[in-house]
Figure 1 (cartoon, rainbow, N blue to C red):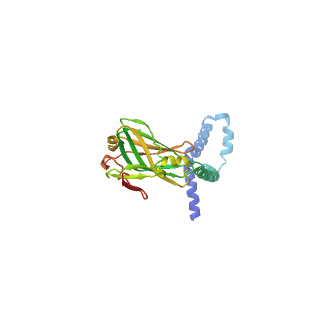
Figure 2 (cartoon, rainbow, N blue to C red):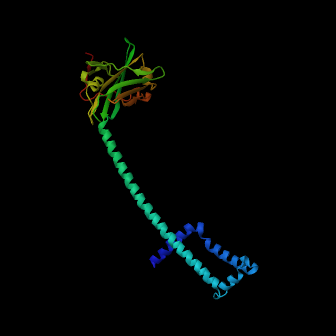
Figure 3 (tube, one colour):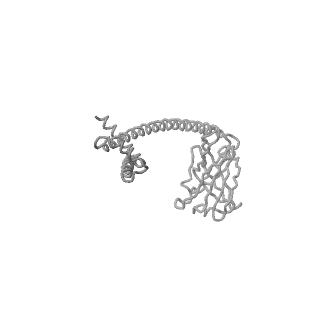
Length: 283
């Protein structure tokens, strides 16, 4: 019984789906037959009344009911044939869909492999500004901004070119990076008389120009930007945006930016002393 019930259910659903287009054939055929019969009987339409009577009057009583049964049987066979054809089309569509999904899967896998290949064949830098210190040199009327910077390379080995950009209401321009290669003393904010001693190998800019940053390696060090004029106030008030740009050997640029929060005292947090840093009074 469940199979029979499912048979009727599937056919009925299919009949409803296709009925809007041709289910009216049954009543239309019935109406056409009786219209033709009435016209022949009344007006001898086409002059075939004698033939019509000869071929219809001998039919058993209520032959119209048999005709209805015949038409219904024809409709059933038509519906069954249409249903089977519909199933064949669905099966073919499903087969094609499965093949298409497999093709898409293969393309996705190929794209993933190409992406992994690109990751190992081209550099992929992630520059990060960790801390910032700012001082003004009155004698030269220049503001020096020192960053502690880290650069992670997720791609192929590459040299790095570091540049800077300063943007504020008073200046919007690329900035100079003093190419420090000697030992320097840097005053520590909020610690009068104390200086950070920076050794030559701590300067990041000349180091990454000469030596490649290997894949998976983190290069860290100090980077200094020189901006003309006294920019202490606008930097500490958050009016200035300072961007460090790092280019790989292909010329692709990566960047990180710093903009002070006045609520934090104009520094992006306390000036950090890293392990191995040397702090002492001005030599």
